[in-house]
Structure formats: structure tokens, C-alpha cells
Image 1 (cartoon, rainbow, N blue to C red):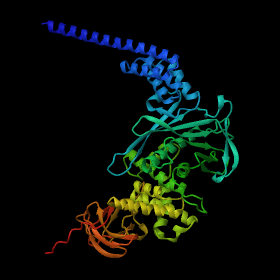
Image 2: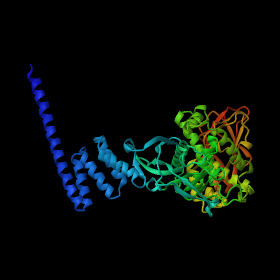
Image 3: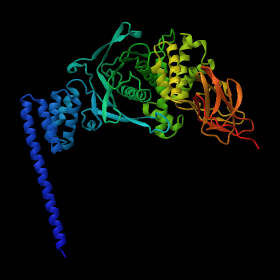
Image 4: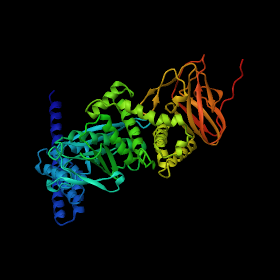
Length: 565
């Protein structure tokens, strides 16, 4: 009865022995290939030497010496990312390898700080990193985009400090970069990285420079503030890339932030540099968020001006609104409760880590100052042609309305189709974006694009992250929307389908046309330009929740009315 067991045992031993022989043979081949690679490297043929090592990896991927020699060759060829990856794998296989650790330290400190890293390498980094995840919702029905960010923590000397002999001296530009008003000195830096989509590779996005307590006039420790600034900057970078695909916010460009103790309270952006002034003065957290988003707006968004006041270009204020709205939306995604829930607002406070952030109040104020101004004045206002402060906020409000009424894609198209920098160019860009969307068949007008000053709602909508949400019409209520139509026939339907609810639709004050969700209603022939659509619930009707209006151009497929009995 024991023979099968003995036979099985013999089989297992034989199989293990065969596997050991195969492993030993693979290791022997790898050793020989590494030796041949060394000879080729000594002869100066680095390409052939690298090929030998890659062959060794295919045969025996766990031989530590292969990774050590690959790292060496990649260093010689200036391939820092590949060298770091090889040394990282070496340390995974042999954690106490002194050569691997010394070479990684050299690559971090021996010259320019690595522009590219891999997430898996951070565990072997001689520098402490903080990692986090940025979440962006591109559109309804599509999974959120998750993107990793990382920034350094601790004492790190800027690249420009040769042998750590003295601080970096930087010239401070005057407003608009026309001249120099002074200099500032920096001897510390926080490096920020964002992950490449669908990859674990990190690319440097930001350098935040600041003075140490010893160098600071106020003997202040700005390390925590620098890390928070870097963190917010990485997030707005992710938003501008994911939501708007802005050409300025490319992966290869690095923004240099200089935290200056001198100068008037505020900030200035010039090319790839952002100067934060008077950093020793205590600010509310929302002011720091606003300044970072403002300067990133000047950096990433196209120039929009040139205005006489409050500043030449409106891209900074537009950046404040757009990117901080997306920060609010992300807070809601993280906690699973839409903005402005208490938990979502608390998440923003936790992100900044230094007191409650009054972001909801800020967004409400900015919408009133910009979006509501555009709605109150109307899209055909003479403010569209002005260059004063009211026209400045009017243009910002128009772009905020495009985001609220249509979403990221339409705003991106509007910005990219503007042929120049003047306000008129961006109003033209919107018309072109509408024409392009109409050519694809439909234009969606979200409920958040309503005009609250010309609407009557028993229950005011919620000030959501990106737009006004939960637009509900009680009996007798009406909601009015501005809408841009092209020449020719058009039709509109509402979503969600409200089969049990009868609504009246007024077009430029004429109506009502009966409308139900899902069935298009013809608007007849319309001239190109701005029009108004108003939805009204009869006094004896049922309440309705409105999500969007879908506008189609061309002859609609409208069903004929049935015979009444």
C-alpha cells in the first residue's frame, strides 16, 4: 500500500531536481552573458553590451548582477529612468546591495534631479515621497480617471546650488515680465510629479523653491507650505490635462514656483515661472488655493484680454473658478457624497491640512460675480465689446456658463477654436464649437445652464461643484435657458423622460408647446443667434426634475399627434 506514495515522492524529487538543473543552467548562461557584456563594454561597444544583458534577462530575470550592469550601461548612455529602474530591481532582489543604493543616491543627488521616476522605485529612493491619487470625472457614464501624483518631503537642496555652497539667486520680474524689480534667494525645494496615463511612470511637473529657516528673514519654516502648494499644483495640472487637454499643460514642461518673502501680497506668472510674494503673511487656506489656481490659469489657459482692469488677462480668474470647481467635484467623488456636503468640504480641509477651507463660499461668490453677471446682462450685451472690469468678469462668466451648460468638451472646443486673444475671439470660439457639435447631431444643454434671475423655482437649485444641480420644477414653476441656435429647423427634447409630466415650452416667449421627455418638439425655422427656451409646469401639473435639454438641428422625426376620443 505504500508503493504509490513512494513512487509519488520519487517523482516529486525527480521533478524538483530537473527544475533545479534547469535553473542552474539558466544562471550559468546568464553569468556567461554578463561576462561577455563586460568585455564589450570595456571595448566601448555599449549597444552590443546592452543586448547581451537583455538576453541574460530573458534567460534568468532574477540574476542581480544583470540588473547592476544594465544600470551601469544605462547611466553611461544618459538613460537615467532606465538606470533607476535597473537599480530598483537589483535592490528588490538584493535589498542590502550597497552598489545599487549608492548609484540610486548618485542619480538623485549627483546632478539634475530625475525628471522621470517609476512608482515602484520610490521605496528605494534616498528621498521621502508623499503619494496620492487624483480623481477626475470626465463625463457621466464613464469611469472616473485615476491619476497618481507624488511630491518630495524633507530637506532637499535645489539643483542650482553647486556643491551646496550657496543659495540660488533668482531675479524677480516686474508685472508682465517687463524688467526686474529685485532678487530673492532659495536653498530648499519640493519636487512634484504626475503619473503618465496608463503607466506607473512619473514625470516631474513642478519645482517649488523656498528659503530654509536659516535663510529666511523671519526664520520661518516654509517646508509644509511648499508641500501643500506642490500638492495643489499637481492636482490642477491633472485637471487641465484630463478635462481640457490644454496644450500648455504638457507632461514635459516643468513649472518653477518661487516662494518669495518680499513683494506685495499676491502672485505673478511669467513663462514657466510662478512667483508667490509675501509668503510669510498669514492667509486663509482658500486664498492659497485661489492663488495657485489663478497662476495656473495664466499658465495653462489661453490669454484672454487685453483688459484695462482689474488685470490684463482674464485667464487667471477663469482658472480659479474652473480648477477649484474641479477640486470641489473631486472631494465629492472621494467621499461618495456630492458637493457641497459637509463630508466633501471636510475632505478639502484634510487635503490642505491647515484649517477649514471656505471653498463653498468662494465658489458661490465667484459665480455671482461672473456667471450671474453674464446671465443678467444677456449674451448680446454691449459688455462683450468692452475692456473694463465689468467686461472682464462678463467674459469669465460666459466661459463658466459654457462649462455649466455643456461640460468639459464644449469648453475645451471653445478655448481651442478662439483664433486670438481678444474677448470677441472666445465668443466666436463658442459659436464654432456649437456648429461643430451640431454637425455631430446633438447639442446637450445641461440644467445647470439655467438663468436663475429669469426663472421662478419654488425650490432653489443646489450650488454643486461644477454647476447648479437638482433643478426641480413644482406646479407653476418655470425655468429659462439661453440657447444658441443655428439657421434652419431645430427640435428639443428633455431628459430624463417624463412621461407622466406635461410641460409647456416657450421659445422666445412664444408658446406653450406641449413637451414630454423623450419626444422631440419642433422649434420650427430659427435664425442663427441667441434665443430663450422656457419650461413651465402647469398649475395643475406634476413636479418635474430636470437634467438636460437635447437640441437637434435639421428636420426632426416628430411623431404626429393622435386623435382624441
